[in-house]
Image (tube, rainbow, N blue to C red):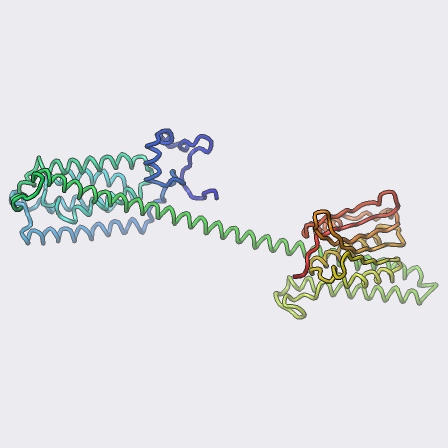
Length: 473
């Protein structure tokens, strides 16, 4: 899945650094730089930038640094009271060195690299100024925090590599200063016992200090890297959650649109069928009224029946839009018409003067009994739309409706409805085309195919829809 996280990206064609990032183009060409970049960052998102700290976090940094300073100065006083001090060092130096080391932490997340560089210089310089302070836990924790923050919060990762080099340099200088320039080792060694090991005392002390500092500073780097990757993971999860919400909203919107389209198709079929019957019967009643009152009464009864059916079906459909629950069914709608209603549909058109022949041919006995509800409704609507079009747009007097089942060459079983008439197009009755378009869409929803058009080599019009046969199970 393509990343939606904020940050700068490399060029998708060349793999080089994104435009506007100076000096980063060499990283992709340098395998060692690429490996370091992947380790400090993330192989899948090497140019991601962690969002800056919030105002609340910045305020917490200031408050935390001040609280830490108070505790650290108190611990210096406690250590001096215990006698943990260098006789050659002036009393004030430890307090000043501790305060100078901690105060930059107030801006550690706002300027992580600047605080790290300042802390590195202070760590070396203040270790010379006050070896006593350098061995205080608070002094070392302050540097640990600066290093951790730089790795965790640095937005531009390339300068971070340089900062890591300065950290190693600062650590080396600190060890050298402690064992050569200052008298720290001599004063500390005076409190040691007699050496009893394979290594010289100075060599062992240097090795011990180097290992301890590597573990100490390496731990800060690893913790900072873990924090940075944790922030990346949280943003990824937030982006994924946002994408899921968008997809859920889109699915809900599509479901609403699909339901509206379905209701629109149903309404069109209902209205088109019943209104066409009503219109034709009304015209017939008007013509025969002076000559045959009985036939006029029959036409009016057909109009009455069709109008009631139309209103009932429209109420059933529109009930879905008005309420989620209702009488009759759990979804508030009356049962949808199916194959059983085809005979009643044919009879309605026969009563209106159209000779309708209904034929059912099953390849296997019981094929149509197991037809699913949506498929049966589709067959019914195709026949209904085709018959309504004959009444509106054709001069046909006879129509045949055939429902059959069969098996295709690929052993795929199907159900087919075919409506064929023998008339010609009635002048001045061209429709909008929405009915045929809706018919094709309805058939396509069931992975079927529709053929609509004039009959080849014969007079009349033919509508045929073939649908893959699915049972109601």
